[in-house]
Length: 323
Ligand SMILES: [Zn+2]
Image 1 (cartoon, rainbow, N blue to C red):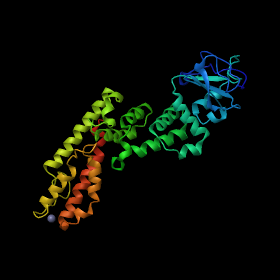
Image 2: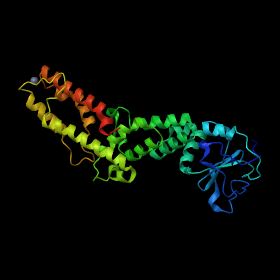
Image 3: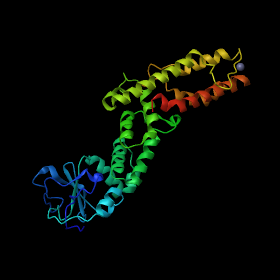
Image 4: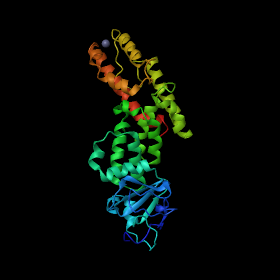
């Protein structure tokens, strides 16, 4: 297919159902000339005079280079399929309408394609992440998808112990994105991040019902119940954990240890999140100031109990949320 031969009106198979011919083809001689129909104006940022393919996304036209789009398996395949002659073109180039895509998502993908170093050095917002993941998944751009998954995993790590404050914003959106784009490994942490937020506070959790499907809301509620149960079991009997190999506690240290557990896990009314059990356990593991006050037998019993509870919680997390 040469640059001057045709528009990409062919739908080779189901893969390309989202590609569609432009409904209203208009010629634009250059970026500065606006269409008669203002709804299809060129987007200056991605209108390269020497480009050889025009993308129509939402209401904008982008003139880019086919060789740059080869990083997409879908585009690569499509561009290798001979196109029939057709006179309709835009600015002398074949055009393709990307139906159903958001312009903002494509701006992210094209920024990765054209301005790679700047892209990697920018502050990554959730919108950038989600745009990158949606386009890289739909059009099979392995490098961009890998980058997006690494960024997502740094916020919602496979091991919930590594989860930090940056997991709290957009947790509900991350859940729907992970399901849409097949990144199930971030789901336990994203659900956990939502479950530690107080819904009556103005944090993200309070908007979950607007973002999550009824099924995911059910998962969230089930997970919160399971975590609440785990917390209550500890509060009722802080020192004894059935199954833990070392439940040693002497009469001297036991009252202080019990008090310590209850104080650490008590909810803070001023905090925007409820007891973040995994994080508390992780901090307790490193609380040498307290552990150092225990007798040797209780020290080992104390550490064993924390490790055992943390390990069990880590393993149980997906099940808590019915994943
Ligand atoms: Zn002791």
